Image (cartoon, rainbow, N blue to C red; front, side, top):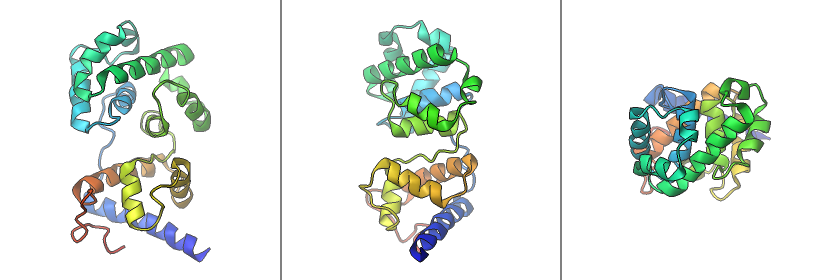
Length: 217
C-alpha cells in the first residue's frame, strides 16, 4: 500500500514538474474535431511534421469534411495524404473511419460525445486500422473523454523511472495512470503532450539524463 502511494505521488510530481518546466502545450493542434480524428489516423508510424503536410494538403482543397471525403476513392485520398507515409494503408483506414462516422452517427460528433467512453472505445476498435492508441487519442482529444493515451514515449519514460514494466500490456499501463491521477481529460491531454515533449527533448533512445527536468524525482 505504501509503495502504491509513493508511485501515485511520483506520477503527480512528474506531471507538475513537466508543467512547470514546459508550460501548456496546446495539443492537439487542429482547427476542428474532425481534423484531430484525421490526424490521429495519419500520425501512425510517422513524424508529426509529415502529418501536418498531409493535413495542409487536405485543407487547401477544403476536404476536412466528412461528406466530401466520403465521395473520394481511396486511391485519390492516398495521393492527397502521401506526405504522411504508408499512404495507401492510411487512405483505407481513413476511409473506414469516415464511413463509420457517417453510418453510425451521420457525421455528428456532438451526438457521438453523448455516449460513454467505454462504449465508444469498443466501437472504434472495431473500425479497420484503429488500434488502442489511436482510439484513445480520438476519445481524449476529439471527443473530450477522460482516457489516458499510452504511446511508446510513455512506456520509455516511465519504465526508465521504474514505475512500469515497459513490456506490460497497454491496458495495464493505462490503468496505472488512470488510477493514480484525477479523472480529468484536461490533465490527461496535457500530461500526454508533456511526455511527448520530454521524450523528444531529453528521454531519447540515447537519453540526456543529466539535463532532464524529472531526473531527480
